[in-house]
Image 1 (cartoon, one colour):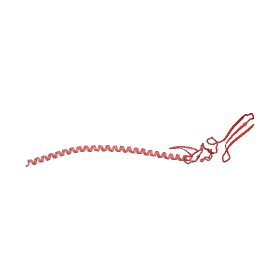
Image 2 (spheres, helix red, strand yellow):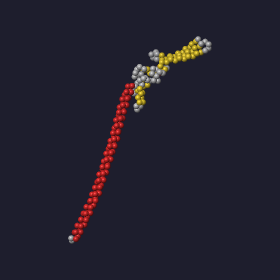
Image 3 (tube, helix red, strand yellow):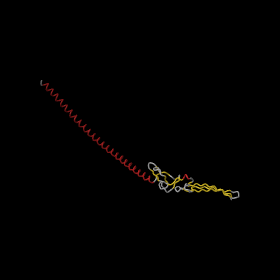
Image 4 (cartoon, one colour):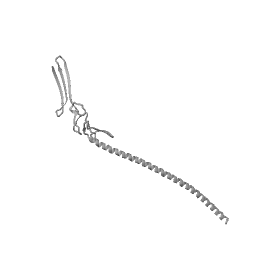
Length: 187
C-alpha cells in the first residue's frame, strides 16, 4: 500500500493554522486508487463562515475589542468609521439608514429627538399663524361690514340732506322772485 499526501496549510502571523487542505492518493496494490480530500478551517466567531485565507481575517472589533471579524461580517460605523463585529453593529433609520456603533446610535437618537422637537414647534407655529390669519380675516370682514353699514347711513343722510337742501333752494328762489315782483310793483 502506497500513500501520496499533499498538504497545504495557511497560518496567520501568530502561527495558528487558519486553513488546512490535504489530499491523499492511496494505492492498495490491486491497481485500485483511492483519492480523499480533507479541509479544515477555523470559523469566524461572528458569522460562522470558514476562513480560508489570511486576508479574510481583519482583526478585532474596535468597539468591544473582544470578537474578531472576517471580511464577510465586518462592517464600519457610518459616523465614526469604527470597525464593528456583528454583535456590536446597530442600525439607525432616520432621514437615512445607517449602520452605527452604540455610541453613535445614542448621539443620532438625541439628534433625531431634537429635530423632532423642532419640527413639532415649527408645526405649532404654523398652526398658530394660520389661526391668526383666520382671526385677522374675520376681524377684517367685521370691519368691512361696519364700514358698509356706515357708508349706507352716510348715503341715506346725504339723500335726506340733499332733499332738504333742494327744498331750501326752492324756498330761496321763490323768495327772490317775490322780492323782484314787489320791487317791480313799487315803482
